[in-house]
Image (cartoon, rainbow, N blue to C red; front, side):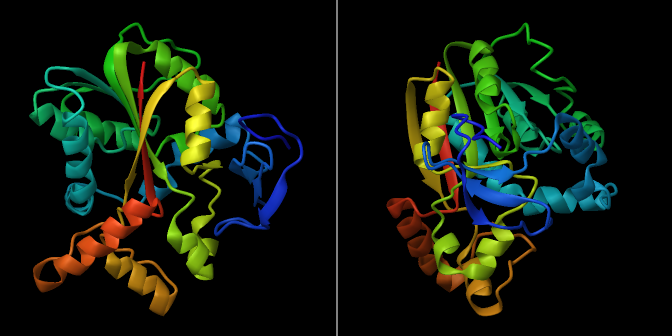
Amino acid sequence: MKCIICNNPKLSLLANKTRDSNKHSIVKCPKCELVQLSPVPTDEELKKFYNEGRQMKNISEPTEIDLLRKNQKSDTIRRTDFVSKLISPPSSILDIGTGFGFFLEEMKKRKFNVTGIEISKFARQIAKRITKAKILDIDIFTNLLSEKFDAVTLFHVLEHIKKTVSFLRIIKSSLKENGKLIIEVPNLDDLMLKSNEAYRNFYWQKAHLLYFNAKTLISTVKKAGFLKYKIYYEQRYSLNNFMNWMINNQPQIQQPSFKINGNYQWLEDIYKKRLIETGKSDTLILIALN
C-alpha cells in the first residue's frame, strides 16, 4: 500500500475501520501528510459502487427529487453565487460529478453555458431532464474532451478520485487560458474531528479515498501543474448539527446545511464565522488558475 499522491510505501494507521466497512482502514502518509483509505478499491470495484448508485436507489420521482432540491438549495445557491463572482455569463462551465444537476440548473438560469459529467445512469437521466443540458457519461482518462472551458467545478468529487494527480492534469488541459478550476472538498482540519469521537468514527467512509486539508490539497494541485491558487473555507453544517453531535452523538440528517431563521441567526453567524476564520470549518474550497 502506497500513498496515492507521493507513492511513499510507509503509512501510519489512523483508524482501523470505517463507518461502513471493517475491511478498510484510514492511514496517513508521514511524508506528504495525505490521509487516505486502505486498501484503495480497484477500478472495477469503484465502477460497480457508483453504477449501483446505492445512495440513490430509494429515490423516486418527482416528490423525492423536489425534496432533494429543497434540502440542497443552500449549497446550490452558495455555489452558484461563488462561481458567478469568478466568471461572467455566457462563460462555459464543466461540472464533473453533476449528480442530479441542481447546480447546473441554477447556472443555466443565470445564462451560463453548462456541461456536466455524471457516471451514475440514474442521476444522469434526472440531470438531463432538469437542466436540458449536455450531461455526459464519459471517462476522462480514456475520452479526451475536445472542448475547452472557462471553468471546471468539482464539488465533493476529488476525494473520490483514485488517480488524483492524473485526473487534475487532464482537467488542466481542458481549461482555457486563465480558466479556473474550483474544488470543494471536506476539510480534514474540521474542528469536530478533534472534539467528538462519535463524529470521527462517522467521518471515515469507504466512499472517500482521500481526506484533504489545505496543505495536502495545495500540494496535490501543484503536483498537477497548477501554480496559482487560493484557498477558502466554508462551514456547510449548522450549529444545530454541531449540538446534535455534542448531545446525541449523531448527525442532523434532515437538511444538515440549512440556515437558522429568526432570533438565533446571529449565533449561527458567529459559529460559522469563527470556524472559517480559524480554518477549522467542515469544508475547503480551492480556486486554481490555468
